[in-house]
Length: 564
Image 1 (cartoon, rainbow, N blue to C red):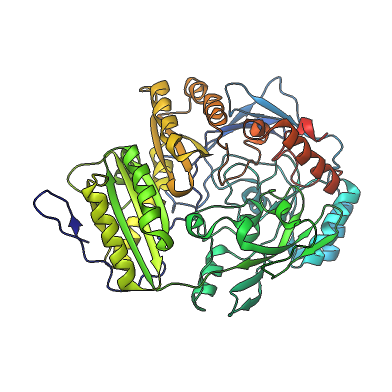
Image 2: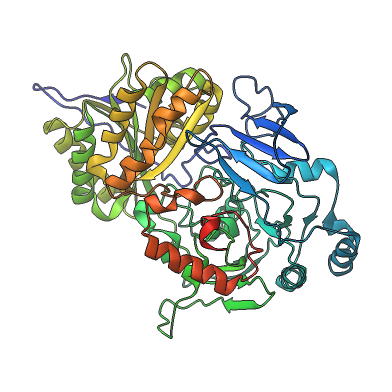
């Protein structure tokens, strides 16, 4: 990997990749978020559940259990306290939900077989706890259906008994949407992992919800296609969960969101009715397009069991550049120029600030400063993907030369092979891992107008001063900021400076408090910062219509006060 620099005397452009690059990304199996801590009460005790920070000795991504527990005097059983704001929000177990009994267990064993009805404590501990140890429920039952019909039978029975359930896939979510809050029955669709069909002409893939994203990527790669979705958690997350959370990721700039790529789906409603919307047509204008209700509803309206998704062909020419910018305005201008001059071959535009790079250098194994000797204020990662190597090279060279002459770039490198490209991507994708290794972290996934996006970061730094380090990176191409506050320890004084300011600022600037992670449990009561009361009332009406007993993923997505 060579470096190029611009001077008034001469310029030297780096030769671009001579070999086609296919899968460039070196990705940890995780989403880019880390927890801020949460106090949970269950079974007569309370526990501070902290992430495995600073003391994790196992392979990153594996589970560990650094929990502190003690007595909660004066607390009421069935109430959980969440400290995500300056004051605690109490969540009470819905008293209308039934409690699991031996007859229920017998019924599930009858329809699923004994091995798919899990009551083992160790397995349940893992299923009850999210991967960051930020949330933990107390479910006593994990069900592993293998077919849509089994999911239907489970939900029909649970609805008749008023047993609350939580759908679960790879358990890689970051806002508490994928684990129980109390004793909800866990329905894990991991066993439903078959590819049903693939059309090599149209590129339409039909598969079950439990297919792991990375496995689908490999399946398509062998057939000359790619998934329109790529996440850091691809080695664990499942397509059903991706669709249910409307996951964004690294390819959204090029291929758009799942609302555009999912052609159809199959979902099971709370009463067990199977809603077959598994179409494979590009155009179908007959009535309401109901599939969009389930894309991003986080399992609160139905359990997605099958997906039909449009996959683009794999292109042979891929280039990756890592550039330094002196200020955020230059990053914005560079994005505009990239869209104008790279056009159809632009596939990713990521940014990170100096604090992010410092974090990566200090906490990611094998990472070295790609633009020595000093650090820069901002960095931009650009990826291009096309079908004509010489044409793509010419476009990228012309863009880089123009950007250097215009003073938008102060330094930069372009990868010459897949190893170098992977090293560049690892800096960006390794940041969640680096944040966890650095210590306690408050994380916010926000969507903001690009021109205002970094203003929030600067204001947060002013508010916090030397209390914590503010780290910012994200998908600049689609206005998605990952705002992280890395602190020496979890501190109410720090949290009081962050919330509700971060939500109020986002709302004032017409942003979204959740760009790609969903609302889950963490932000269910914050939805009014991004949606009007009228809109949320309509959502609540849809929830009551499709799930009148409220058994599907309760306490998530919407404020409980609006659906009771």
